[in-house]
Image (cartoon, rainbow, N blue to C red; front, side, top):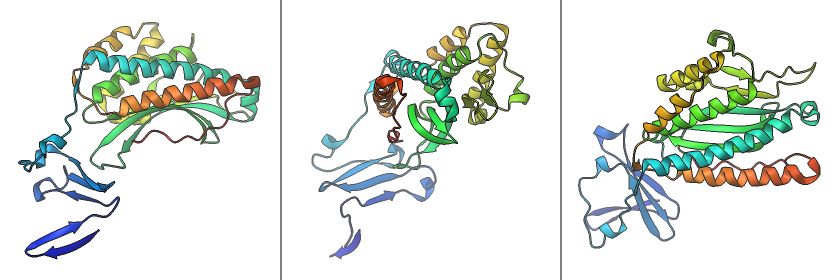
Length: 286
């Protein structure tokens, strides 16, 4: 990047992969316009609240407007990812309960995390991850999904409820879950490890306490489980809150990634019953 003055004009000359951000004093902490030089051209993206007008020959032809996705299509996308989650959960559960995996201290870890986008620091999001870990290091990635915190909170709530309901139904069969103050938002499966072994199945729900809506979902699903009630009504109500909207490509990326992971995991696990080959494929871009 370099600055040049030609006549009365001051130019910022962007070289390949250079990037600058524009904003105003009023919006400096809230919004910006990103300008990136790539492949002999310039890409512009950002918050429309900063833009007063767009002028220039052919400029409007370059503007990309995200299509509106129906609530039904969004739900179908979520359910497709949830199908991958359940399949990989069941395969991972089978593996970590085997003697081979127990001896290697390999455990299944379900986590709910947050992130700030690497490409746009104004975008904050939430994830759901299911991985195999050994001594707190991921040795096999399973499924993951990333959701925009501001615009897709209702979608994340629906996913959290489904994931948690399935996780508890499979790993706490016939068992109640202790009071919240006792388990401190970490759930261990009911399998009792032998001396020197690790707890085979573990989840960390602590970050869900940050948002009242998510906290309520956790408490409701655990409460329903403890008294033998279904959480179908809760999940149905959350589904009905999902509305038509412009949707980021995060869900589609997560579905594609998780489907690919499932194919690798099932194929690798089938080879002489050896279990999945270590696969350190990076998560899709957040």
